Amino acid sequence: MTDLFAFLLQQPLLLLAITAILVSVLGGMILNAVPWLGRLLRGAGTLGLVAALLLTVAQAARMSGSSDAALIWAGMQKQEVSGQATRIPLSPDGHFWVTARINGQERRFLVDTGATLTAISPSTASAAGIEPGTLDRAIVLKTANGEVAARTASIAELRFGNVLARDLDAVIAPGKGDTNVIGMNLLSRLASWKVEGRTLILEPKNPQPTEPQGSF
Image (cartoon, rainbow, N blue to C red; front, top):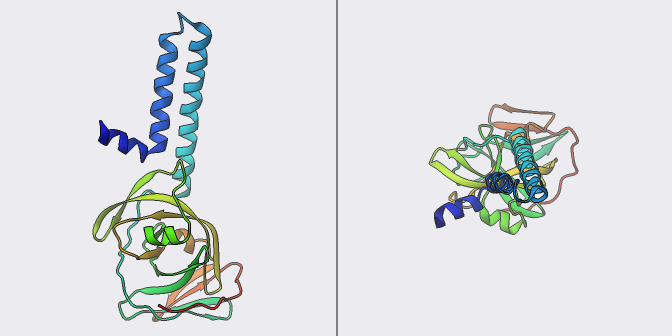
């Protein structure tokens, strides 16, 4: 019972739906004895179910429930801005890495075109003041190292090179060390992205002034 309760706390939309069903059933049970209260409870239960359905549809529309991200901690070469594009050289490990500011906190990210969603580590989320929303659901990420439980959240601002993304959907994924990943939900916002030789070229729709960044 304790495990079930803990699970429901991690699934607020499911908890809302179950509560709404119980309230509606209770209303039906007392409808004959106390008609006004029965109708009130049944109405509240129906509204709760509609709210849970609409919130579930909204979440499904804006993000996928999984991400295929091969997350490997590695070195990174510095990105640079050339013309209207940010150019990211291929690192010796065969991946593209950027130094970015997430809500003003400097962190490094793996750019993974195979990842559906942007993912951040719990330590990055804590430093950037990012917490899962009250009604955000727990999901499972399918990675090269197996399945990892994660919570959905929103990044107010993510900036690197001349790229700036606001109100970006993300997942807080424990069990991956301090690795952060930029996924396709950010790349799809750009005017274009492509790989030329050993360089990833990102061209934003509205290029931003570059900011000085430190090194790791």
